[in-house]
Amino acid sequence: MTRKEFEADILPLSRNLYRFAFRFLSNREEAEDAVQEVFLKLWKMRDKLSGYSNVKAFAMTVTRNHCLDCLRKRKKEYLEDSITDNTGTNDMMYEDNIEGRESFRIITGIIDSLPDNYRDVIQMRDIDGYEFEEITEKLGVDINNLRVKLSRARKMVREELKKRNYEPVTA
Image (cartoon, rainbow, N blue to C red; front, side):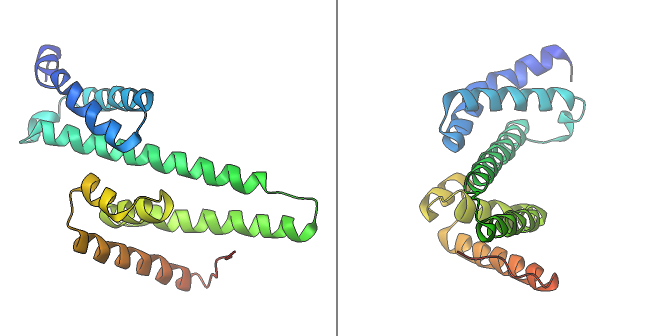
């Protein structure tokens, strides 16, 4: 794909991509940054874009994945900050904090290794705190399908924890 083709086919999608990113991120600056990152990704793979039958749909998918990564990063930073902010001088609190961070690291690692469709659902519901209706709207899935995917994702996490003989710390 040449620069002119890219400008003619991809750049006009910016408004749609921005609106789509804003629905995920709920922040104007982050949505603008997300669109710029998506354009960079698409530009870097411009020679492969002709292999996609619907470039607009592909651009939307790249935007969706980038936004979900941003939300994951935002939530992870928030959780890490809240864990480190709770350190106290008491040895018991310190040990609980270390165990909590280790639990968080292991569980997020397991979630990150799930297949995309399960990872996105469990991330949005259990970590990001979205309501079912919000998730169905953002992912475009039926609520019953969402509930099944979430149940299966949680089961996969539990099974992986069992394989590792790991009991997460609960509050």
